[in-house]
Figure 1: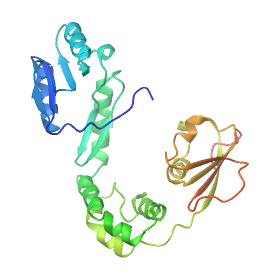
Figure 2: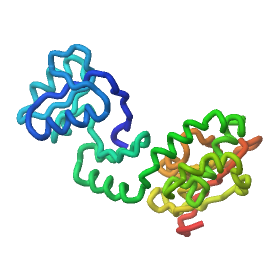
Figure 3: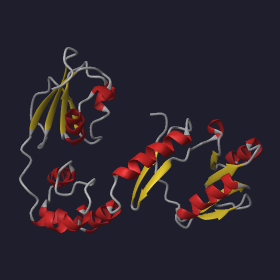
Length: 258
């Protein structure tokens, strides 16, 4: 990963846009769409700046000297940050970036994703946010609550986010969340250190496991596919383990599946 993706809250904040023409106009529309206030170089409160000029070097240098983070159109070498192609299902935002390598590639990846995600995905997010307290009441323990939500949101689950109409089923799910998770232990035989070699089941288990026990030979790139808050322990670990799904990772280059 060459950059850190962030969602910057700019609603009501000044954001500087310098330049004229189609590229500058596009940046102004983007900034206004995010709820920010477009300002010029004379503004002393802006912390972000977009520069769309034929010769942007001097403007970018001035703004950086003032402490602003700067994006320069078509000049990734001058950018403090890049702008991804954004799939908008407000409040769900999916950003596709290439670290400035190819805006065209990012756009077409986003267009493919547009066709996959239902129009009411944002409504599902809003509804889940609205029932957060009800979820805490039903599942007081955070781990229990997360497992219930993982079960509902997985492929084919009661609230599958890729299925139309899931937003209308949240109250039904709360009333009848289905059976407890049956799988509490799984062992994966990893064929290589390349995450692209993971099967769909392996990737799903890595993304939902509460605890991961791994052999020393497991590549860090594989572990990066796990949940960030999953407990990670060496396979020789002894003693109590967290509740939930415990995943054991072993290296076995002689196989390609589990």
